[in-house]
Length: 277
Image (cartoon, rainbow, N blue to C red):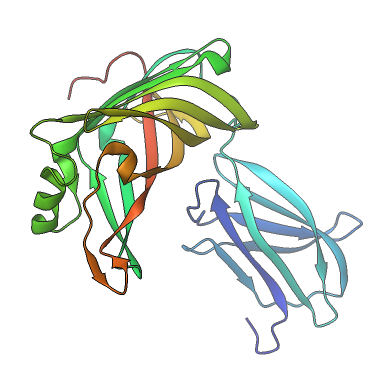
């Protein structure tokens, strides 16, 4: 950008927050004439120093495989247009995946849990072994989710900490080798969002846990299959599942927070099984 700050600025993202590099931003005036065309960089940023006359313009953002987005933006008296963040949905992404069974692909999915540490930072862990199935109903609200996670597969990047998480203070993997989740109902929360009501069984204790689910789109993969992508988050309290261990390090500050945030990034392959590798 120029030192005066004039020109056009924008950032282009997918609905799950990834930068859309090489997206194209086109600006037209109120007569429909194109006055600027710029390409996003590898971070999804558009930084175009060319100043434009003050006034309203139409901004159209496109990217291969994504539905275009259009909006109105104003160029200020200083010649600056700040479009902000433009979120593009995959082409056809609002169309729900076809009904039937979908099998979670663990190689292209992640199950993570984040806990507060010492009251000042977060520790992130992930489970590396899990499986699951999504059954999409003809009536989408009749869809179901079932998943199984191997408790022993917890990985925080620290062997000593992982060993502690596996013992009886936390996951107690010898007595309870699996975590399971089974949905009980689905509640719409938007055109591509739902609240999944379900039961989580952890350490032999079953409690209701809601997932905030976002559908990210579906389409063919390079291996001849069809995939659908979802993201989901949930919060749960450790003491709801009899994980009451804690160590107070100073002034009442606990070593590990009592609330866990769960983050799921899921790819599911159409069909009731994964292809043989």
